[in-house]
Every structure is written in C-alpha cells, then in structure tokens.
Length: 201
Image (cartoon, rainbow, N blue to C red; front, side, top):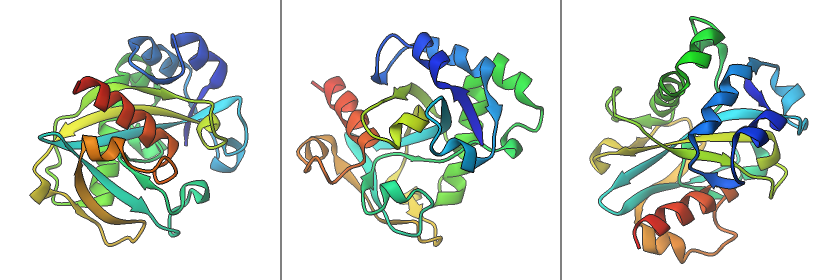
C-alpha cells in the first residue's frame, strides 16, 4: 500500500483535521509502497486513502461499515466517504507520475475504488478535490492520510456492490448528518460533515 511520512505531511499542511491546503500534494513526492502489516501500527507513516464524498442537491451518501471490512477499528460505524488504499496496480507507470501529477493519479485510484464498492456509477464521474484529512485524534487516524474528493451524482446510479462490506446506503441531508449522534460516524466522516456544513451556512 502507498504511504507518506507522517513528519513530511505535518510539515506540508498548515493545520490538523480537515485541511484545505494544496501544500499537502507536495508530500506525494516522498510516497512509497510498503506491506500493510508494517504500516498498520507505525505512526511514523500514513497510509494514503482517496476518500470520495457523493453529493446530490444538499444530500450526502452515507452507509454503514459491517464486520466484513478489513479495518476492524471502523466496524459498525457509518461513513460518508467511499475509499480505500492505493496499490501498485494504481500506478502502472511508477511513482514518478504520482510526484508530478498527484491529483490525477489519486483521482484514478479513487475511481477504481468506487467501481469496486458501487454498481452503476459512470466510470468517468468527475471528481473535485475538497481537501486532506490529517488527524491525530484516534489510533486509526494516526496511521492514515485522507485525500478527499467530491462527486455530484444521480442517486439512481449509486448502488452498493454485493461484497457485503457496506450496507444501508442512502442519501441524507447535510443538516441531518450534523445532528447525528457523535458516536455513530467514524472520525473522518465527522470532519467531512463539519466542513460541508460550514460551506452551506
């Protein structure tokens, strides 16, 4: 999986949490691939996770993670982001292009993840970069680095795959997400919800 050094990400970004700072792209020049086992508990590195928020007229797609997912620390929590790890197959031309065109490369990896998790969404759905997530609040956050994209979609095109890792998918008004119990959503989703809600005020 693709990782970046935690110290470099910290230096590149102006804040913690959800950060709209293009400086975060610079850290991709230091990205490399490692085995997942070595990255899960090593807080000196952050696993790069493209994280896509699906939107439709003030509503956001949300789903629950069940226990079939690989990340046990997120089981039974709801999410507003569809995403996953970046693998060597996402970079057939090697890491050089990631350093020079990080946004395009990670958007392509995000589309691959969308195709795996959802059925019906057009392959070339435009993705808009929204920001980065660099959070230290929870153990799972301290080993991940989020690259957040947004996509405006037709809800009729969004259906969960039958892999079983994601259930109860639906579009929910942002105001309803803001009022949801704090322990219902994963930490990254709470950060995204707060950012999107601030933009609607």
